[in-house]
Image 1 (spheres, rainbow, N blue to C red):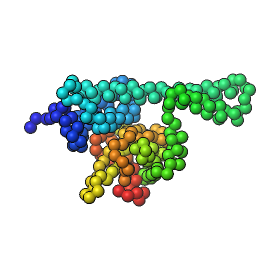
Image 2 (image 1 turned 90 degrees about the vertical axis):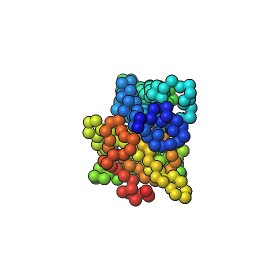
Image 3 (image 1 turned 60 degrees about the vertical axis):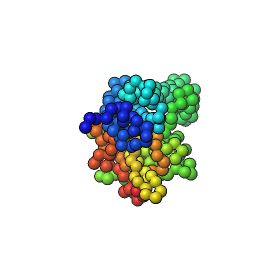
Image 4 (image 1 turned 30 degrees about the vertical axis):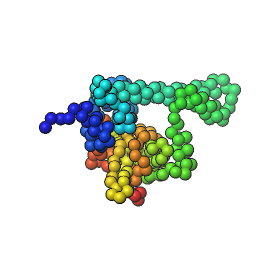
Length: 264
């Protein structure tokens, strides 16, 4: 039996068939990741870019005109290029934020007019100014904001092999998970961590839905997932996968909220 064409798969995706969406991901996952890397994105950023492409495609599949559009592949490549450029721009903006804070420190010590105790306020002024210019998110501020929100749900992800735990803050408003942790080891070369959320769908006969929140490399105390399509997750997993990540979790589960007593 011949493999379905991209247009046939997209037709089923527009009909909200998860199997067709998974088939499209399997066909183009590595290609989109390679494209993002070729445009200058890091391994972690490329994984984020690809995840955002898939989120957009699932939410906006009906906007792809099967009668007028030239190619499904071209559409995916254009989306990847757009999100890659956005990711790179955000990286440059965060670099500007760091630079402004560093310049504030240089000013303090060079001028010798303001005491060292004044530096934290001056640096915060520089960071605030930089964020006003570039709109760069501060995940530390985001953590404090989400912890204060009444609807935030907190998951504790215990390490299966005794690794340091992650704490996951789920924001229903943003449908995103903010991971907070320390001492998380960098994965082996050629591998990445991948976040998964388990959702229950339906009332009479509920079924489990599994969705990826993106990939990361564990070199920071914070990591913000891509937006999820579903609502409230019941379980959070972190696996180790080969780059650029998988469409289903592999056998190597490293952290699991179920180990902390969170309901599955």
